[in-house]
Length: 253
Figure (cartoon, rainbow, N blue to C red):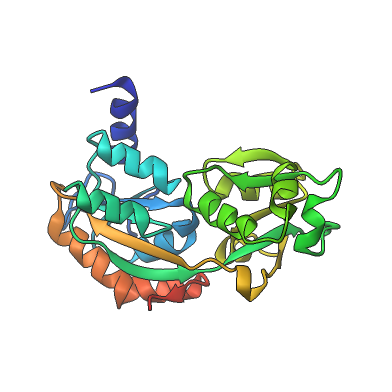
C-alpha cells in the first residue's frame, strides 16, 4: 500500500463529516456506513446522513475522479456517489462496485460573484477576464468543456485562454469566486444555491446545456453492504431523495 493510499484510507475511516444525532463516533448502535461523494453533494448528503436510520454516516467529499482513483487503489468506502455516470460505470466494468443507479440530476451554470460585472457567456472571452474552471477529468470540468466545444468559431478557445485556475472540484471554483480571485466559473446550480446569495447564476442557452446526471453504487467488499444498499435506496426514493430536492437537485429520469 502506498503512503497516499494509506492516508486516504485513514481519512475515510475517520470520516470527513460527523454522525447522526443519536450515535457517537465509536460506531455503537446499528453500525456505520462510509460514503465517498462528489463535492457538490455535500449539503444534501450531510442533511440525509444526520437522520439515516439510526446509523452513523461518515462522509468524505472530493472530486469524483479522485474518489474513483481511491477505490482503484484499494480504499473501500461502502458507497461511491459521483457527479456523473461515467465513473461509476467504469468501476462497475472493472468489478469494483455493484451495478450503479442514477439518483439525481443537476444543471451546469455560469456563476459570478454577487456584485460581479460579467453578465453573459459571450463576455468570458474578453481581455482581462479571469476564470476558474474544473480541471479536465473532473465531472464539472468535463461538462464545462463540452459546453465550450459547442460554441461557434473560436469562442471556446478564447474563453479557455482566460482560465487562471483549474480546480479539482466545485468547492475550489466556488472558493475562488467568493474570495474574489476569479470573475466567473462554471459550477452546478446547487452550488450557487448553497452560497446563500454570495454568487448569482447566469443560465446557459438550452442548446449548450449538458445532461448532468449523478450515479451511485455500493462498493464491492464494502464493510457494511446492507446499510450501503439502504443508503442508496433512500437516494432513489426516500429521505435521501427528499434531501436532494431541498438542496435543489432534480429527480432521476
